[in-house]
Length: 248
Image (cartoon, rainbow, N blue to C red; front, side):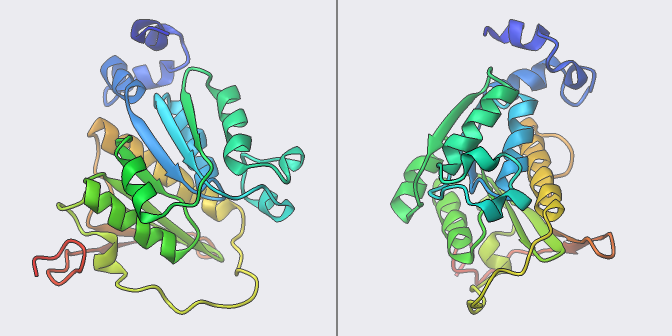
């Protein structure tokens, strides 16, 4: 569709009434490209809301297939998708939500070279992964190609979110210098609604960064305790000795 017809289609009428977005902002979303790494508990709601909002190109990265245990929290997948690629499963649902958006499927397990090459194609990256190795990889690759990213992590009944502008704000390695020891056995949760909340916040952060509105979670780590239903904001500072963005 032409830009004018996209804006006038009625799909985004609730955005057009917001002075922070309006026609110009909606057009900016239409020309933006966001990569979602991990199409599980976090990536499902994040991708859902990005596509519904009219972000013009949304890339999906995940090498896994859908498993029955995923369905408790990964809202883009259903029983008929079990055994099938997560990115293909998600792409079908997302296309049904908004066929105006280009969905790009990347059914791969990211390595350093793949990440750097792929991230160059997008304006912003969402870290919706579930392991520390991937999170450090995303942070390193985004820093290398100067792409902003939104990190989220979840465990049991809680989660955290932060937004990073490489070279400008506190980075992931400033906060988390090394991965904690691996824990054997089944993962501890999470309750399905927890990644739903955190993934939705990631989508909102992405929209704010793309549009240049509001106050993104830069130099701040937002944590949420679902059992207490309380949010906490932790002020962050760049570490001059950070191995990724430090001055040393």
